[in-house]
Length: 384
Image (cartoon, rainbow, N blue to C red):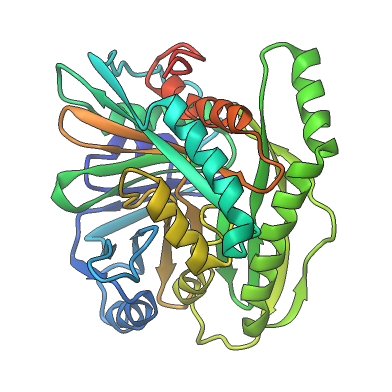
């Protein structure tokens, strides 16, 4: 099956995931499973897959489902599912699709307010006993015509030949669409892999500046501290499930078309094959990459300082099959698409060494993944 055909056949509400290795399209919903207890949901999914018409369940976990009234996780067993190989170079021959310019852009909060929240967070880290907290901001874009998630997804796949490019239906007819660099968890047989990312620097069109940015990230004490917090937390969360675990001491430099990151590939050998990819994703999520550490204190501070609900931003998206195998990515570099509007999200990790102005600039750089897929010039959203 040609990956380009799956991309062409995607329709609003379907599940789509393209990685460096495979492309998946799940069409329709034979069964929908939702819940705020993700561990119990994993058991329900396991039972449902025993009699399912298709071999996988796919969907999204929210940033916060634990609290009373929290956003529910949503998975579907598709009516039909198709698999193909990696999307590139199959999609390279396809033309880009037009999205259209927004009529209005509203920052939530304004850039100055976000910088003030970062400064406030830095002050509170010591008071709360926090090593790190992640603060995000959003941009609300309004359009005169209906927004087509199919067009945004199409361009995202063309622009991002690595990572995890996705679309998934959400309650109320909305769509989550994006291209994440970060693998939360994959399970294949007894092999478990996580590739956490923390520490960021923007890419540049100038090769010299681009190389210097990458080298600066590798040399950044602040970013290495931020990354170490994350890698340690992911390794400790996986350790109870694994008879063997390998977590390198130093991160490597990884890249997307718009950002440099520090990443660590953590691998393990699963001790109990009854633990599915969805069980593991629920146990790992949310990591310090998108919340902070300790988790509960960081989540409380996020709720206090961010003037919006994250919903499915900074959650996880992926699939699990009847054998327990599956793959889950962290839902960053994404947007929630409604009929004539969409909300973009971007965040950054705050540690004691964080500079508010630099953190604001980092969120602006991270908006570029979606901005470019919409046909907006790089830096167009930076003024917001």
